[in-house]
Image 1 (cartoon, rainbow, N blue to C red):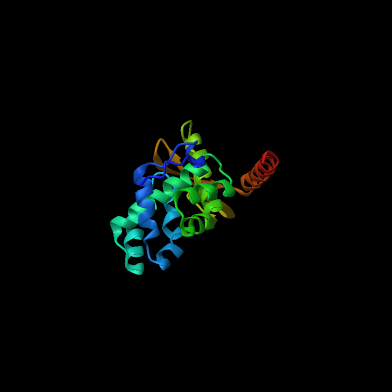
Image 2 (cartoon, rainbow, N blue to C red; image 1 turned 90 degrees about the horizontal axis):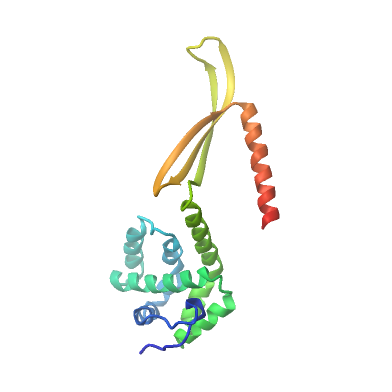
Length: 205
């Protein structure tokens, strides 16, 4: 039966009935599956969901002897709770109160609270990333290597070291990349710029 208890993670609204039902599926999981539950829940906190999640679910089912449909619903319910609490930057203690309201079993709180702080940081990073993507491109990762240029069709013995950077970023919902080559002077300028950005971010935080 639905508890109808107001949850701080939901702005004072009770949990939807299907979420409460799916929490019961989580509680019915064998202990090893609950112990390792964040192996699935953590990667599911991104938006959109990763392409590898279905394969991860299958592997988890085989490892812990659980049914895929029930596991998926349990992950969905716990993801909903963690996501909503994180969106409101709910402190750990207040989230614990919500979980205790949802279930008399201490297992719900002990499992979800174990990874909550890291999960909340992940969700809030996703929220920031989404807000930035609404208005432009967002850098996801940087790959680099060092090349040695000995000569070229332009002639001459160059014997120069250059840096190669590949910037992987999201643009308009698509994954894009840009590769640039940097001579030593440009590398120094980039290094200085990154240091200044890091210092500014530290002061802002």
